[in-house]
Image 1 (spheres, rainbow, N blue to C red):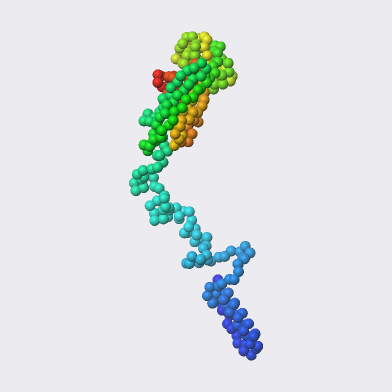
Image 2: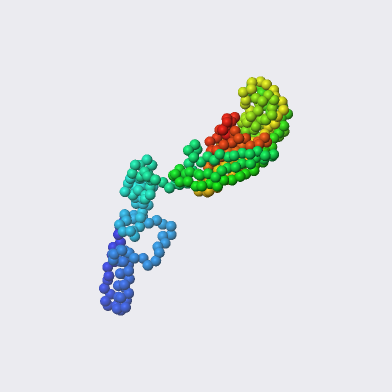
Length: 310
């Protein structure tokens, strides 16, 4: 690109001095716009009408313009990625490197709000007392321990829980250990745990997890080691499962429920963020089930053993 020549001043000494003054000033302005008097200073914004500015040199001062090529070479994502890597001179402040010995925390305050887990701590043994159509559940005052070793004193509580519904069995029979029950529409679905009660022979009785349900819970199926045999009488009892839990930094126990059965999904629904189950109570139409209720939060799915719970 050729550079315009500097315009030389001519001598118009024979003309009016005012003309010479204006002429000299005009030449100085033109030469200034051509850059012969130093950096070109513009007194207003430049509108290029959509045209580009090209051939921009590399910036030197902080106020210099920057070309797209220069920006990509020095400030693009791939360039900054290398400069910001952990361990580099430009690593971000507060950036943590996993498994780095030099950045391993010796203590952390997040443990202050994490409850300790059973069997080490935090199980409350509920006391069940059956009445005519309800069960009284007493949870004693207890101490909740957090993972950092701190504790909080929990107040006790007393709840009166109504017995859930039961449905008379019309027919019940097992074929190759698959038991089919016909009753009124119970609302139970596959995966729920229903309690069979009062059937003869007694081998049919107990809590079982349903493998299938149809007709609104009127036809139920579950597996039991009975072989092939028919039964008579009895009821399908809908379980009322209640969870006692503590939310972090609260000094009281909360009651959640009832749920139709004690399943991992129901425990997940009950375990809200920062919440820990400390006791489980199972109630049927026969009353509070001591053998299925207990302290702590470890789920046991299946027929209960003494002192265990669903």
